[in-house]
Length: 113
Image 1: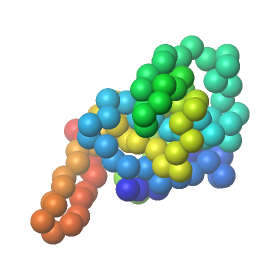
Image 2 (image 1 turned 90 degrees about the vertical axis):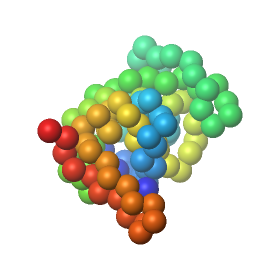
Image 3 (image 1 turned 30 degrees about the horizontal axis):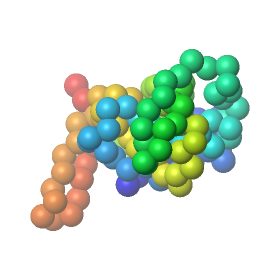
Image 4 (image 1 turned 135 degrees about the vertical axis):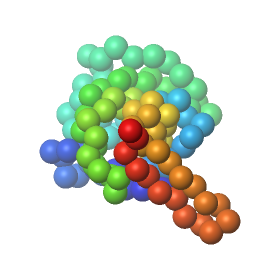
């Protein structure tokens, strides 16, 4: 897990799991409220997440992690009240090269070329 902060919103930070099996980067709906993103006015889709059906809405944000600052699209998920987010293939891993060493217990993120 790594910490994620949404630029210009100091209270909008949370730990996120780097999830290679998640297609898109997903953040809980309460984060949308913190940054003033109106999910009612946004187009969204219904999807299954955490054993429930939630409304997911895409938003352009700039997030900061230990890997750097990245303007990207995240999907806020109304009804998902998780204390963590999921950094997925689209919106995060498509910008970085992930190296993982399970035996030694470390990982590294480098900007993709």
